[in-house]
Image (cartoon, rainbow, N blue to C red):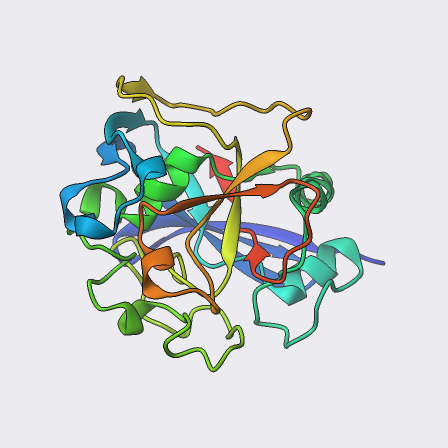
Length: 248
């Protein structure tokens, strides 16, 4: 399979981004300027918070890039040569294991010469909150979930094409709802201590990996920016896809 690849760096809505094209499929990586935020059970999450979102703690991150949307079916096909599901080219890929995602990323890096990866849990939450442009919303981009997410209340029990709801403060789509998204980290309890660029634990013997963001078959509570879940890295779940990250 012949693969074409092009990289363009530009400016979008006063936010830097990088655009990549692989096998005729273009995707955009949005720059998240580094900063410090409170991760976990913050005030705007109200009484919905669970014990595994506590304690809230301060995290400082360097700048990085994150996918404007979830990885789509068409991008997965361009890189891997097969679908795990087929709803349409602009739908998010799902029913992929964490291990499958690592294979996809290695292949993508071979094709592009880049170092794409899954986001850390801290990077994911900072981006979902809007980074340094955050307005303190409960969900990613709004306090009204229907504006920004496909979830149990409006999805008609199916996923939807990416980018069809309103973006958050950074121009990122679907960080609440549509599909859960794998993170790189093993799932561990939070510490109250401040952290700088936490990278999580990459222990292949511990199969529990973080998933974030809720999905099309989850209630509003599961679409909050601080909600976190765990899934075995070998599980293939119809609710879970991925979003790419790239260090600056």
